[in-house]
Amino acid sequence: MKLHIKNMVCNRCIKAIESAVFNTLGIQASHVQLGEVELASPISDEEKKRLATQLQLLGFELLDNEKSERVTQIKSLIINEIHHGVGLKQANENFSVFISSKMGYDYSYLNDLFSSLEGKTIGQYITLQKIERAKELIIYDQLGLATIADQLEYNSAQYLSAQFKKTTGMTPSEFKKLGLRKSIDYH
Image (tube, rainbow, N blue to C red):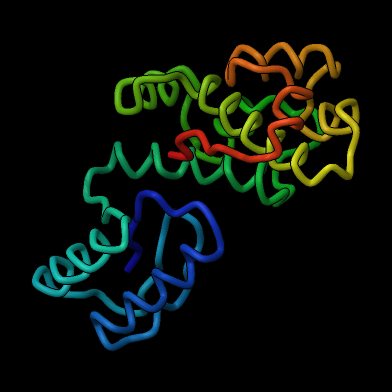
């Protein structure tokens, strides 16, 4: 039985979900990845409610709505590629083509669905995630802006810098001088 979970963004989330499933249901999850958990067998509606309550206490949301599940899957694809370098997306492959092929739906349908539930387009969400990743890489101070731009598939450091300023209100160098990373909404 596959369950979709909202707000999973990192490996710590996976561990938290595994623990919640075990502590609430007394079973091991067969497989957990960002946005979903696979159980070996179906669970009752009562067990599902208990799990949903436990997940909510941890800041997650068990999704029942098919449309919400699709949006969560889109977010997981984007986060996995930008933040975790999963590598399912080919170098310089457009995210629209990548998402469409992985989801099995037309991109315009997915973008409309995403926009209606999230209040922003998939492209805007991708930009926010890229800027969040750029912030992380800038703070690490191991790569130059041109290399960061290349890693995030920007055409130039200037374009990344313009996107960064538009999103955060400061240039990458101003951000670097601050020396801290104030997170944008990840979800």
